[in-house]
Length: 371
Image (tube, rainbow, N blue to C red):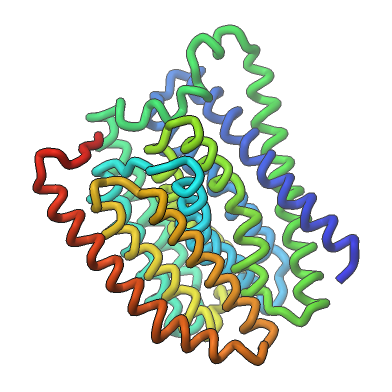
């Protein structure tokens, strides 16, 4: 592992974070100048922008044209979805306090996220995700966006606050549109350059350490491309906008599954390889994490501080297992047994109790109500 590879890795992550911010800000402001509604901007430009790092890295990976191209992309999507829930929401709730969960997220978005995660597992049972399956995911994205925009127009206040800082009318009048163009183009350039640097650095490190692209995608690349979601959710929680933190993470996961993986599989010259370890461990973990959101979110429509700490602890445990498995450490099997026969049952019991409490709380007149 060379210093150059580490520099490329760090520079790539920084480029993705700054580039995504520039892209979102510039595109949203330009769209607002054309008269596009804040609802459409929030559901398209902003949502796509938060997943832009994952898309840039995934497309850059398949553009290499190597035999295993796509493994890093799959690991990136799966790892990012796990990180968005356990890391982004976990840290946000633990640091910023209880996060508010909108009723719509519980009724619609989380179930769709669970369904999309299961669909990816079913698509990968033959150990590959082909172009046709990519088209199916993109088609599902179009249907979801169309339906969401139509539904959101009936209640525009539910998400308009999400982009107030970006498309504030007074700020638009005072600023030159060329500044917005600069943000947009600069963001795109940084995204492309950052994705190339990150993929190149991560690939070199994986080769030098003998670690698979899948593991690198699940860890270093996933955390790096999830930094915009982590930063956004944490800042939203600290600023008191606790409902935005949850929506940001769930929305990004939906785009990762349908847009990032769908577009990548659609344009890849060869089917994306799905490793047996991903089918047996990583994708099921992604599904379990998505399912775990339901009982916790239903419980008063709030993600509490201790629940956020539990999410973060699970993420540390998952990353620890990945490292032990990749290094074939002597305690790997013992660690797996502890997680399988102690932590998993205990967690299942905890989630069941939380879900029952949430159902009882929803019947109470004192229960928390959200928009």
